[in-house]
Amino acid sequence: MADSRASHAAVRILPADVRLTVLPGESVVDAVRRHGYRTRYSCRRGGCGTCKADLVDGEVRYRFPVAGSVLSDAERAAGKCLPCRAEPVGDIVIRLSGQDRLRRLFGSIDPASGRAG
Amino acid sequence: MGVIRLGYVHVRVTDLEGSAEHYRNTLGMDQVTEEGGRLYLKSWDEHDHHSVVLEGGGVGLVKLGYKVATSADLDEFEQRATAFGAEVARMTKGDNVGVGDGLRITLPSDHVLELYSDVEYLGNATGTWNPDPWPREGLRGIGVPRLDHTLVTTEDPVLLERFFAEVLGFRTAERLVAGPDNDQLVGSWMFCGEQPHDIAFVKGAQGKLHHFAYHVDDWSSLLRAGDVFSMRDVPIDFGPARHGITRGETIYFFDPSGNRNEVFAGGYRTGPDFRTITWTMEKAAQGINYTHRELDPDFLNVVT
Image 1 (cartoon, one colour):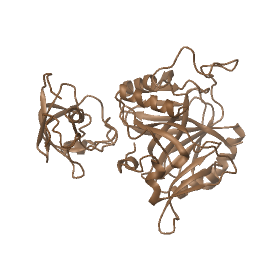
Image 2 (cartoon, rainbow over the protein chains, first blue to last red):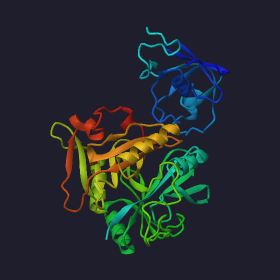
Image 3 (cartoon, rainbow over the protein chains, first blue to last red):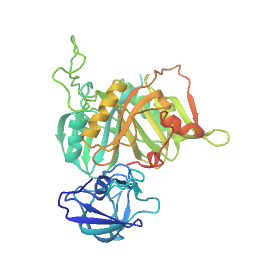
C-alpha cells in the first residue's frame, strides 16, 4: 500500500534488515501490519509479552501503560521493548527475538511494489 | 444446595478508560457503578448486581466469584475447604459492591475464589412479566447476554480438580491427559450445573488467567461478533471455530490490556449423571480447535 501520509519515524527491523515508515501514533506492530508484513505477537495490547524484542537503537514511547509483570523496569533498562505498544520517537532499530522473524503476508508478492519475487 | 454459577470476574487492566470502552461498547455491557477506581458492569440478561469488575493497574485476575444457593452452603463449604487445607477467610457485606457476606478461598492454584449467596438483585433488561426476547431499545456492539465460564492455569491440575470436586461438588465434563498410560492430567473442564463447564484449568503458571467467556446465542451471533471485532480492530486469538472439548463454538479475543476474552456458543448439556469425556495429547489440537486442528503454541502460553 502506498504511504502517502507524512511519516515522522522509521523502524529498521533486524535481522531481516527491513526499514519501514511509522506514522504518528502508530505502534511498531501496527506499522509492520500496514506494510504487509507479520511478526510474532498475540494480544497486540501489551498484555502478553509475545512480541518482546531488543531496542538496539533509538527511543520509543508507550502511550498506554504496560504492566510491570509483562515488561519490567529491569528489562526496559536492558533494552527490551514491546513492539505492539511501542511508538518510535524518531528512527529506531529493533532486533526480533530468536523465535521471531519478519514474514511477508502476501507470499512472493512484494508488499511495497506489488511485484512478485 | 451447592454452587450455582460463575457470578463475577474481577480483573486488572492497564488501560481503564480503553477497557471501559471495550466492555461497554464492543461487548455491550452496562456500567452499574464506579467506586474506588473500580468499574462494575453487567450484561443485559444477568440479574445480579454485576458480573465483571475492572480495576486499574496491571493485568490478570484479581478474583473469581461463584454464587451458591444458600448461606448454609457457605458454612458447609467453609468446613470442607478448611479440611482440604485451603486458606479460607470470611468476607463481609460491602467488600464487593452489592455483594453480601461470603467466603474468600485461596485455591491450591493461588487464585482467589469468593463464594456468596446474598447479592443485590437488579433484574435483567427485559423483566419477568411478559418479557421481550431481547431489549427492544437495542443493544450496543455484540450485546453479550451473560458471562459463561472461565479458564485459569495451575501447576497442579490434579489437586485443583480434587478441590473443585471434593469441596465444591463440581463434576468433570472433560479431561485432557498425557503420558504413555494417559494418566497425566493436563487440563480439566468442570461443571456445577448443566453447562459443559463453569470452570476449566490447564497446566501452567500458578494464579494466571487464560480467559473468561461470555455466552452468545448461536453460530450466527458468533460470526456477527467477529464482524464487530473487525470493525473495531479488536485483536483475535482464534476463531470462529468449533471446540472438540465441550463441542462449543468460539472466538477468542483480547481486551485493551491484553486479557483474553471469549465469546462461546453451543455446547452440550451435562448433569449429575454425565460421564467424563477424555482427550489425549495426540488429538489435543483437535480438542481445542476442532475445525482447524492447528494450534498456535502461544495459545496455551499466553496468560495474564
